[in-house]
Amino acid sequence: STLVNQFTVEDVRKLQVLSGLIAGSYLLYKRFFESIVLELDFTKIKIVEKEDPMKFLFHSNEIAINQLVQTIKYASADPRVVGIISRIDKSSQLGFSQIQEIRSAILKFGETGKFTIAFASSLGEFSNGVLDYYLATSCNSIYVAPTGDVGITGFYVDQFFLKNTLSALGIEPQLEGRKEYKNMINLFTKDKFTEEHKESISSIVKSLFDRLVLDISQRRGLAEERVRELFTLGPFSATEARDNGLINGCLYQEEIYSLLRQEAKLPFFKRLTYLYINNYLARHPPRFYFFPHKFTNIFRNFFSNQRVALVTLQGNILRGPSERGVIGSDTVCAQLRQLTKDRRFKGIILRIDSGGGSYIASDQIAREILALKKAGKKIVVSMGNVAASGGYFLAMNADRIVAQSGTITGSIGVFAGKMVFRQFLEEKLQLSFDSWCLDSHENGKFYSSINRYSDSDKVKLNQFLDRIYDDFVSKVSASRGLNKNNSDNFAGGRVFTGQQALLLGLVDVVGGFDEAMSEMRSILGVGPLADLVLVDYPKTNLWDLLSSPTNSFEEKGHHVHFAFFPWLLGSVFGIKSLVQMAFNQTNSNATAGFAGRIVNDAISEVQGGCWRETRGEGQSDRFYLLDPRF
View 1 (cartoon, rainbow, N blue to C red):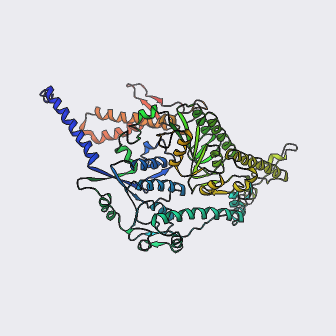
View 2 (tube, one colour):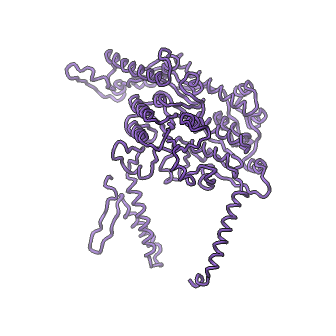
View 3 (spheres, helix red, strand yellow):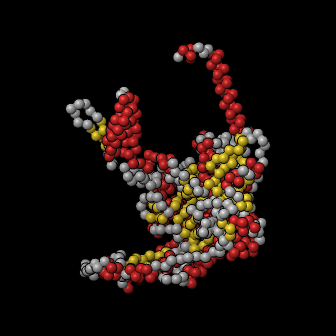
């Protein structure tokens, strides 16, 4: 306090000026004397369609693919960022469509004149490295360690069939499909490819391979025929790949990093800083007029009337609430009903990554999407790795459908049936069965997993399938403006790549998030350069996850179904207890005993999700349940 009293008002003002000069000098240094190289390390990030809202509690390395793509896009315009270096040792977690999405973003980044380098210790180590290499070709330079490999080989398909396995176990699959190209049932009822199955698989593989060859030939400056030949000659060692023009050189990681300053062409006074791309926004937020950042654009986001909701639908489509990996019709329909009434959003981008599921659930969600359109909302679908069967059912009513050339879509068909376990239970487990039906209620066995379908049951099953298939085809034809009489061309259970679906009229545009946003601008009529604010919907916070909805309009997403809330509050109170006991401790000679008491007391105070109130001598302690629902 004596030192503080010695300062005059003039001294304080000088100190304020000095602090401002220091802060300003630091900002100028960061702006003009520091250059950033973004590190995109696929061994340290997990790319998902939508981030877990609880990830902040567990230091998760998840990053949503749209966030990653937008970050790369924004970094391309940031003058502080001079390049991207990608470590592509483990990108096999990604599907073909996701790789195309990221690949396109890196290509556009490189077109700005900034360097892009990919390196790997090995692109496949005694394993297939085709997708790893395909992603690496998005960069201008590719380096592999001298001891590494480039594991590109020709395309082929392994497919297991369970017919003989089920037969050996005494399990009989009784499945029917519409139509002959609905190949899922073949896994259970056949022991090899049918002609239709083989035709479908070969068509998809050929389409994907043609796209891959074209992209690699353009990036590596090789003729397409030469690329096709190299696929038949692989895999290659790193030196063989370099000699064949597949990569630029054989270098170890530290040798590559020593070249970056030269690649960036920096003057001597600039310092090179490396930053993981998922930390880029948090540590180096660019200025608001230059970069739409979540903190610097609060006012723009709040007042903008050009907001677009991003609704991510990923997983199997089922009736009921959404959970991780499940698109629940109850949850999604409630969310879409909320959007119908939300006047803040003029458009919705539906990101769909689903192979299908329940037809009834799909129809309920599709009906809510139609209600959105009737309310005047514009809808654009962006397809992920897969948007087939029920996944395509969700997409068909959109104003525009955007898919990558490698997206798997279509599969307009249906299958149903059951597994009969009677022989397995009787012969393998020695169980006995007897049946009884009320009067003439033989149809009571229709859903039984013990009894086979009767002839009348099979007639009823096929009637169901015909009705569902006709409804599916009719709705696709109406929504996409296709001739139902030519449905054999686009339906029948056939599966297509995005490129094939474009030619058939099942999708409108080949591309990813950028193309979806361009289509949204087009149908909103706001001009190609209009700044649309993309907002994740619904905004799920911690309280939403810990609480239950009070009505069908409040569904936000999957909820925490265990006693997390008591645990969280118990932990808070426990920490508070520890701090209080530490400050109240006066006996410095009993450190060990003190530590033991702290641990024991803390455990007892938060045990069981309860808070213990320690009362006076002679009185019993009181326990309070933190949340009566648990």
